Length: 247
Ligand code: FPP
Image (tube, rainbow, N blue to C red; front, side, top):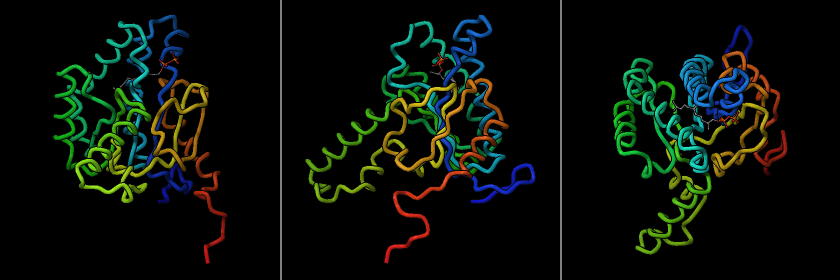
């Protein structure tokens, strides 16, 4: 869909996914502990939801905590979980004010019980909202998501409700945590790293990738516009040839 940003018409990506990287380095540059960077990252995320919606994006998915992030120190993991806890406390109210729907993807079963129930509460309270469709990946790993989907599909085959020949791309997508979301059009990774680190492995098959040196806490509206401008310079062909239609 097209949109006008600061007087210029752009093709606006429907779904933007972000790997919010660089919180630790942002804090280190200020001689502060890593947790300070994560707190600032959380604030940047709240602002990002507002900015991206006003830029015309409908779906926004962010990587907040990966299945690999448990390897970090107990102090850092606890700090990130507490940011999430605090965020969830006021999330339903804030989302409802903005008509925003919030979902969580990832394996939530190992999260603390209070976080799990808060997630359910926010998802339930915002499910009718038609504004920004905001998804947070927590204890999320792309391989883990595919493995969990495969287990469910295998069970359906075992039980006889699905035949092996019926397993199509659509059936697999429908068993992923993202079953309700379109695939991302644009993936942004901040802080200079150029890899996808187990994020949305299935869903990013045809997405455009935008890498920037900006650290996540500094990523603002102007940075999103730079990313959209980059997206507009790309020529998406989904494996076909531009201008050619199959006879
Ligand atoms: C990566 O930076 C960032 C994370 C692993 C955590 C991101 C979490 C937040 C922004 C908290 C907000 C979450 C919610 C839902 C409110 P890094 O620590 O790898 O940075 P570095 O590469 O500079 O060390």
